[in-house]
Length: 381
Image (cartoon, rainbow, N blue to C red; front, side, top):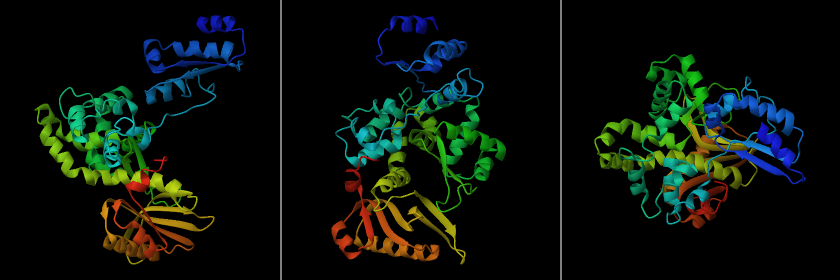
């Protein structure tokens, strides 16, 4: 507090000054009373000054939410703004590995997400597979134990959170399924998942046309590094400890395109949100049961209900040729008939690569076609 007092007495001009304290939670760990000191400094010296901005940063989301922003914190109610730093976009990721193709950049994103601290560890001279082996598939590797370390740092009961994340990574996506897989009761699972959502590790999706408060929720691991780690590293720790990382790498490569297909759907969602021929209000996956008892699904359904415009999209992480496009196009039309939407309809297919795009666009005037070549030009993903 004396530091702020002396600084403001020394400062005589009206030029704006920004004071930034990085990793503020570490300071709290050393001295809990520091929050009260900052509260007094704010109330006495800073709150009425328009020429000084104080920024408190921290990578420990849990501690920032409770100790700094929480209701019982001395600083509660004094913030003038709050900003959660998001992960980098794909084009920014490519700057870490400029020699990589856009396809390889997506492979990197699917494994590490857009966290600069992880991306900075990549060696641009190595292939994606070689980087994964170096960073994750050996004892002592820089990212081998990062997920467990983060859970221990942020959470009081890391074991239960690991059980939940393991269950989700294995395809258990409903609360009841997660509870059965972990042996925890549903109420406890809900509480743990709320915390994982707060940390931006887990999220959920609901049928996009359903009401906002629907309980039809399917959970997934949102953080790509955690998703990759719990799918490939955690189940194979014994092999890695035995120095058999090459065996694990073979397993990863055999499954990886299937894993990436789910990540690609989320990338396509961001792409279509800004690239569709109309302003989309909401977009997401939709599934429903028809009157005939069929269970149908649309990968991405975007809409602007006020103007009665709808976009139905199928997303494929594969190379699509004209016969594939024709088949998917007919399938989208069939699902629209069963969904019974009224208004202007756009059909869309997003693929890793689409052969003869121009010819297909001429054949189907109401069909939008996008692949990696189109997405690479976008700055919004």
